Length: 479
Image 1: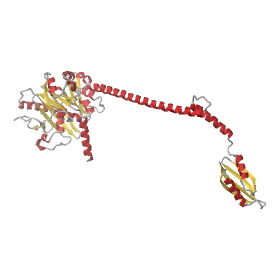
Image 2: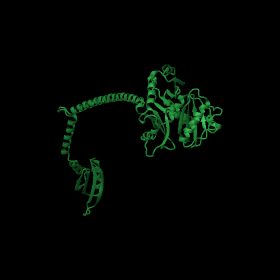
Image 3: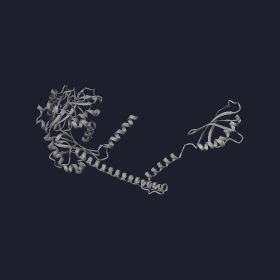
Image 4: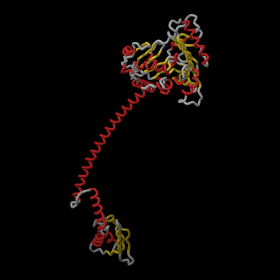
């Protein structure tokens, strides 16, 4: 349940962060098909709409779709380049080739097959998931792609990505509904099984061979041909058969059956090879957005034809806009920090001024005969001078007071003969003679009663050698 909740939250967040509108286009020999959708469902979408290649009526048609000129550059636009205008091949690269060198090495491998110069070629690469060293490559003419881009830009449209149309056809096998499975087979094909799909329109036909893997489908071979208007279904099927035979020379193996999204004519040569299926109609924009969402940034940069001189300038414009926004926010932040620092310094100045005034008042009281210029230093110097005087005048314990206390403390009638007296920093020790042990206790009580000697204790007491007097030794703590 927890994983289900997290998945639902992730999907909600993705819909929240998805663009308001997404435009997809597909170029055909007859027209440009455009489809506008709202991935988050907050804005209205438009179905597939066809535009003539001569540009007639484009402005009115785009306005009817809900795309005014000022919004066209901000709308993400994915354009599919037709397979009949590309050269396709699968090449095996050395394992030492890095991702950055992959396009150069693959281009050198197919240079002899190109109908246009290598330096005027745009490449779209897709490494196979099962064999990363084997790459399927699409090659298109840079001048042809550039000419069509300029025609689009005249109408305010600028595709951010231009991908091979083969990817859109291959995507049908990844998320096809059960109606696409001949003879009611299951929804999943065994991993490693070779599959084929044929897509036919009024003006062309496309045939693909793929290999199903756990990570997805690997495109093994692609072939496309044009079918002029008025071509009969039987002639169309013969052309498709020729394509399949040409693919047999380049593909490692052929599938047992091809999925064909058109009905077969009676006596068609494709009857032993193809199984007619019904496809569910979906808007081009929806299929394109789902395909783009599954690709990583590295895969998109490798697959798109917008490279080199035809690189999408919107990236740079977005970067410049982002830099300007960041600079404005940075200036605002710096201004806030400066204002806060100024206010803090002002408060500190007031506190310092009040402290200085208080010090000067106290200094004038402590040093009435001095001109107060630097109160802290002057008070420090005065304190040091007083400390020196205190040390000079002080002699430690009050020896005279202690001696007077010791000599006057014994009560009258008690004789005390002081033998020794030792006064340290904290303690006083005395020894003497008296008449009796009772006199020793009287002397201790009288000394303690003076308040100058604390914690007084008798260390020793005993008869003297003459057996007539008592010698004793006491110790106490003085202030």
